Length: 196
Image (cartoon, rainbow, N blue to C red):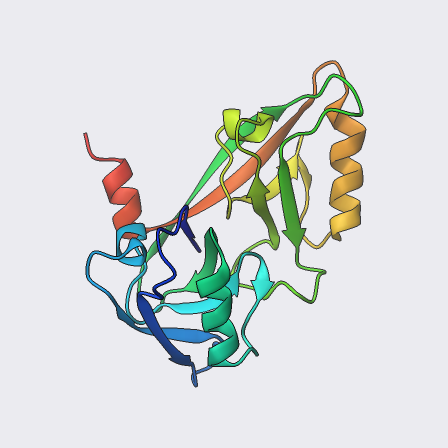
């Protein structure tokens, strides 16, 4: 699961962390300043931070992680939250480009990269960046979404290069390609989005 801190207004850390000694490696959030950008974004005490801006920080020192947080203007935190139910939602996104120089407006990471820690039960093909104003954003893609397949061809177990080749071969077809995306929400987020 990912927590996005879109803009930092100060270099004040706003959270305290410590090494996590359970079966999940990472940095455990032990305190969050009330009213901070972290609290507003939904980070909770007990969350285990595993990545920051697509960088695996599980083996970094506390000081190194704190310096990354302090120096980054925008933060995308890959976290594990224990004892919390999640809801997975699948949807299909049509993507089509007109020329090889056109971008889809997103970057992704897959499980064959050592730098990307694996989250239990996930498919290992995460959207790691979405360009503001780009095609992917206009189609509703978000950082942390998992690409599952394109036109029914599963990405499970494929390398990043394989997935890239599949997408490139289909994006310029007259019909483009339909990418199935899975979005994981914590149960309270899901209930919030489904309120009438």
